[in-house]
Amino acid sequence: MSNDNDGYLNFDEYIRQGEPAQRERAEAWSVAIGLQAVDGLQVSDYLLELARRNIEGKISIDEVIELLKERDAKKSRLKEYLSYTRIEAVDPIESKMGRPI
Image (cartoon, rainbow, N blue to C red):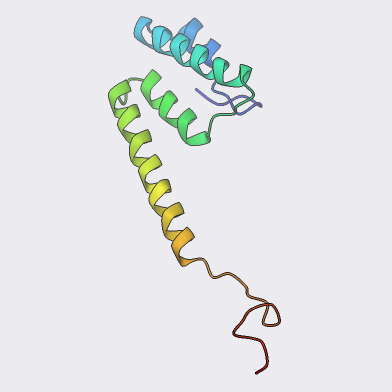
């Protein structure tokens, strides 16, 4: 199954042509992603890929949750690292170190 032009999975295709378990998972994902869209949020391509894999029965919903938690933890660690290693430009005229003696 493929993504449509809006970047969303074609849930209708799974719902119409999928096996019963695929239809159920596709309906659940469609509602969940639709609720995000109502709030003006767009889900990531990564989440769409996980949704597709879950609908197709390749991974469980528990695995989806774990993968999302792992990715979030990695992003948090990277953000923290970048905040500690950021070098801020200092105006030598404004800084005490840059003032003439």
